[in-house]
Image 1 (tube, rainbow, N blue to C red):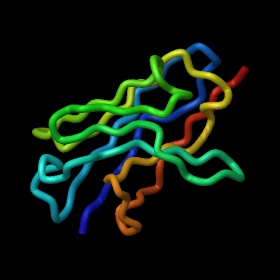
Image 2: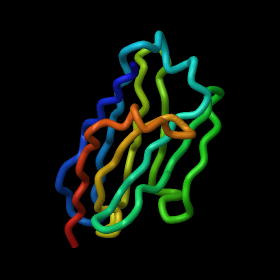
Image 3: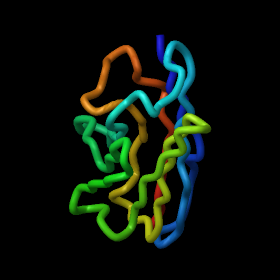
Amino acid sequence: QVQLVESGGGLVQAGGSLRLSCAASGSISSIDSINAMGWYRQAPGKQRDLVAAITRDGTTNYVDSVKGRFTISRDNAKNTVDLQMNTLKPEDTAVYYCNTIPSFRSYWGQGTQVTVSS
């Protein structure tokens, strides 16, 4: 079984920055065995959406709403996937999760809350 643990969330004012980290452990020896990892977010009353993705070779993709502000990275040696979030906006407020792409239901962790005040 794979465990994904997110951390780094918090309360920040609009225009501020946060860095989220996802640590993988369990039955995988390394996230290098996983082709694509992603960060997802779920705002209150909304569905969970993928916002940033990174493949094994480092290719990244972002939804338009975070392009130029968020940067996803992975460290296969440390089994971590990070999300650097800059110029945060109130609409970025959500619980952020990491998972594979496509996601596996059993891999969802508790997520980390990001709240951006105006």
